[in-house]
Amino acid sequence: MESVHQDIQRIVVKFGTGILTKGIGELDTNRIFHFCDQIAALRKMGIEVLVVSSGSIGLGMGQLKLNKRPTELATSQACAAIGQSILMNIWRDGLARHDLTVAQVLLTHDAVRGRARHLNARDMIETLLSRGVIPIINENDSVSVKEIEFGDNDTLSALVTSFTKSDQLFIVSTAPGLIDMQGSGKIIPVVEKITQKISDMAGGTDSPTAVGGMESKISAARLATRSGAGVFITTGRRENGLLDWFINKESPVPGTQFLPSGTQIDSHKRWLAFFESPSGTIQVDAGARKAMENQGSSLLAIGIIAIKGNFKKKAVINVADTKGEIFARGVTQFGSRQLKAIQGMDSKEIKSKFPKCSSPEVLHRDALVIL
Picture (cartoon, rainbow, N blue to C red):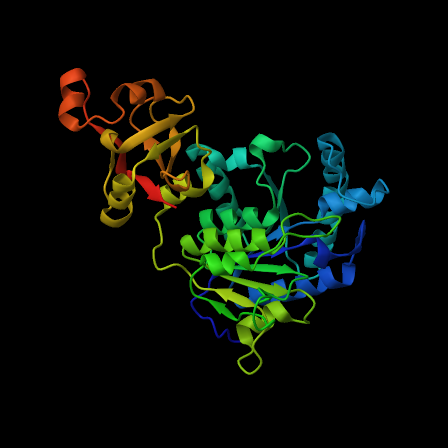
């Protein structure tokens, strides 16, 4: 089989709970095995495949005879602990039929937050791929708490796409794509840029076992496309849909393709933008925002109008405009106490008051990313 997308060498495929199950706690084994057949065919075409698989909490709910997703943290964690082994066994059995080995990779946001841990996770997955192993990735829901969770597997899949430098993210669920509900009522085939109009088309989910919905999928698409990957949202109900996307020239697979952003960011700035958890926020005036966004300028103290949170020098912090909208993130050269002392000062004033200050730049442009 010859791919019509010769430039794609590595993909991430995220499977939603709804497409992997027949109901609460019951896996659709035949469908999962069919996905495994397609993954095996893609591997024979020389395409590396990473799988982000939802379903562990839903499976655990079935074992505990729960009718809707638990809100209590300990119960949710218990469901994940029960369901994860069931989920992995099915993926292992399905891919073993093609002599493919799987590896379970459970992540929390904390595991990829720090730069060193981020690189360790990336290197481990690179090692698996180099040995022909299929990583089956999920959030480590059995230990995740609010402070270290990704929130949904759409977000997780986009982060995995980013730090593994994958070429394409497929989000496979019950949704056929992004539907223009306020207009034609049809699937939007291509999105060149995620505008507010596109974001407004999204909604949440009514599923008793899932989180996110189209809103989280568009958010994931925004993240992945900024990393240089394309994103395709499609239904998993079409037979051979994943494989057809690569080889079928005559009958395009229904769904929505988000094109990679023309303003891609390098690996260090991707880490700043998507992986590190900010320690605080500084609010800046309109002039500072304009200079940072349009001229690629560093942030100087004179543009700061407010400081929120307690943080130290070298911490990652958010930058918000006068309306509170976060538009940038970077590594600060000053702690919050120091910033409050120099807030609104120009460079000469800072040098006069603090002679030992080596630089008046609060966020240097090399350690700053526009979101």
